[in-house]
Image 1: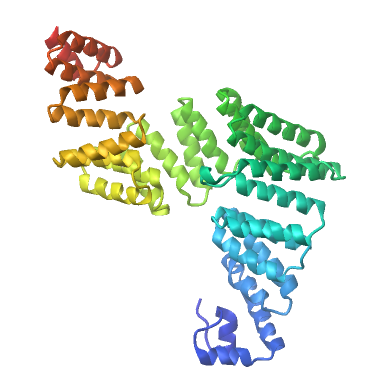
Image 2 (image 1 turned 180 degrees about the horizontal axis):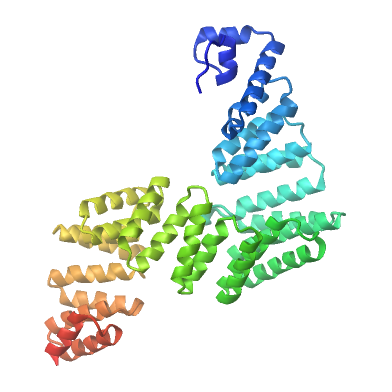
Length: 489
């Protein structure tokens, strides 16, 4: 918005600290009380417009420099942080929180809000050491039992939720969560204890799950749900209850009870139909159950309700691939990479699609971008091998397929692709060996058909006929298989 006829001091107060040295000197020359008054005035003017975006930047900026930084300034920063966390703007939330911590009274309730909110934002943004320092600051500053319990929980989750599995420390996480539980069990207020202890039990369930103890995890979540039903006031803490039911759904799914898991997801979503995450999770479950139309509806609801995040588009692309809508899948993958240029799986799937579309140069660009993120990735190496083979660079193709197989010995497409290369190069025995391994990993009509061709070329017609019969049993409508059987018979 443009402003007219404003003094240098007003300019600074309205738009931040300017780069012009003369303006900065004029601003700094103001008496502190006058400078604070101008900040208050500008914050009031912006608030009066009713434009919500001012509350996320300009208003907190002015309030923290106004006449009441530890009151109005703290509240403006907290309101902005809370909004940014809800929308997933983690770096913005972390910035707001660190500014708020400079103003909030240590040990106060709002100070603790800033500790928790800022640590959560920092952890989500990958700044885990900074988050850990905030929890340690809370432990050193406060003697409040709830603060110590929550800080121990936060430390546990930093160790248990590290995005790199190799850097997770489940043992240390177990120690921290046990400390949180021990403190929460001593809280005198029944409802507070039920909420806090249920939260901690749910955290311990995550640790048990990541340790491979799904039954133990489910028992912990069941205990947390029982606490909520027994001791929390009816209608209170719906988000907590919703999370517990959704986590129970995920664990039931892992234990092979998709029907029970679906009922739990339904219950969780009914508590807050506008919360997008569980539509995505329920969509994944429905997709696994073969209910593609229902899964697609959930993915689309998740996309509609959520901030612009890549996961909904990626999952919908996977479903569209399985139903043969290749153009729709490509459009979703394009959008995923617009939102997150570092989304490795999207490069893998789009590269494969581009090969099918005959857009080899575009596919190669995706392969190169993906391999820059994950050198030696087996799936990308397999696509690279296919591209090199199409281009007639057979030595390079063989090397790429070897990398793929070494990195993922269970990757059927790599064995099948190397078999095609060996067949073209005249290595029929090698082609049969690779196809045999591919069939061992997963039966497919095309694999049997291709092995039949290689066996026929090797002068082994009976074995070739057996493979054609098996291919026909798997796909009796394939015209190539039908023709080959007729000619061989």
